[in-house]
Every structure is written in structure tokens, then in C-alpha cells.
Image (tube, rainbow, N blue to C red; front, side, top):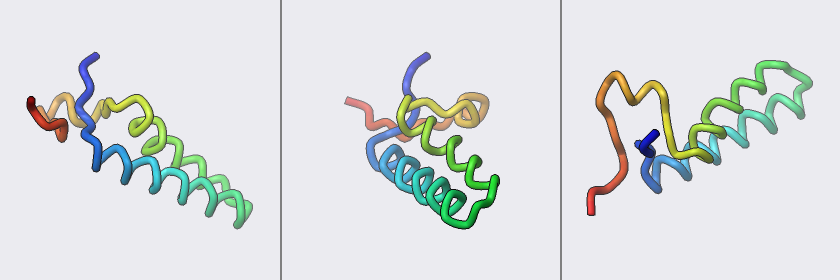
Length: 61
């Protein structure tokens, strides 16, 4: 499993995921669990939706 999520993309995903989770917790709404998706894809630096589309935001060396 090769990483396909770059540095900026990773940061945005982690921040967005945390924001959605915190919103869900503060509003007692289970939809905050959706924040786990961007959070986890940012942490593992791999997005399953990017694979079939051939997208990678990782800068080539």
C-alpha cells in the first residue's frame, strides 16, 4: 500500500476530521463519526478513493 496523500492534503484531512468529530461530540450528534474517515486517511497517508482514479497528491522526488 503506497501512500497517495501528500503533506498539505494530509494536514487538511486531519484538521477537517478532528473538526467534524468535535462538532459531533459537542452537538451530541452521531454524524460526527463521519470525521473518522478523513482523520484516518490523513493519519495513514492512503486514500482508497484515490486508487481507482489514479490520484496522488504526494510530490515526486
